[in-house]
Figure 1: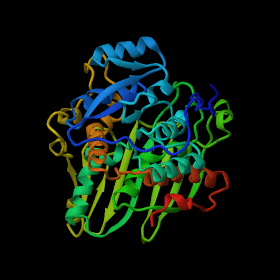
Figure 2: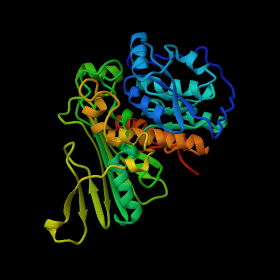
Figure 3: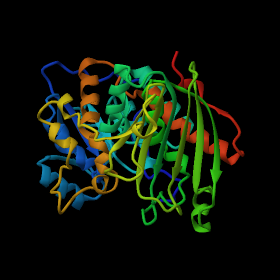
Length: 399
């Protein structure tokens, strides 16, 4: 597979309007996990959530499929995604496959009458985002982009401060996501930084539930020639300013993937009139809370972020602080690089499950997911045009 092509084909998946699968209140929602690298982290969460079951798993490699299936006791197994979508007992799919496959697999699932939870980003093309949004509107099916940052304990802590009024008026937001992707396979080499920007966009848009209206982005630095060739994208760092619709707020985000010396970092800083919260510069250090009008040395205060497992069903609460595998032998990369996504995994599953059970939109829904994803896609267009303002597509904006 080339770095810019999808490995998944829609051949054999039917088209046309499909009615959503109905669910009774006494029935568990049958979820199929597709992609068993990062995706395997969610299997016991779906198994132990009171509203769901992990009904099936899907992986192209038979040996890995059987190893994971045996480990977690999942009997229904597929190497063929199209065959999985024809299974009438599956009501929702959780897609954890390579980025180039996300859109095609989500579109196919929606056409097959399945609800969709999909790891980030939604797509790498604006038109694919449009198709997913249109399908959810036409069918009534639910789509949720499983953005980890907006369910991390750090974000939930900041959100709690905001909702209590402790931050005062929000004046500015910024976020970053820096990561060294050298050595990662397949489609990663040379990937434009803003194509995978939802860990930055999600928190700055999600705290106040704002829609990005337009962006301006500048590229900085240059990656190696062999990386540039993959996507015709030269930039080592992309920095974007976001203007939010119907708001006096803007935000700044920046992203790097190659040839920048930096420990892994996801960050989200919120500047309020009463308090400001800044994520630490180094992983596992405390947040810094700045309080207005104190003597200068007392303004900043380190604060250890609490966990929010108490908001979850007891059967899945333990997954906020550890992975699903044995911690010494099979810890997933998200726990060794990224602090386990801030304990977000069970919160994501809980939001998706309860949204389906309550027949409401999850957060973020398809339109919001498209807005967050398209910020990055539009930002990269802006960077290639020297920082020109690029408007977000109308279909990503709320009424």
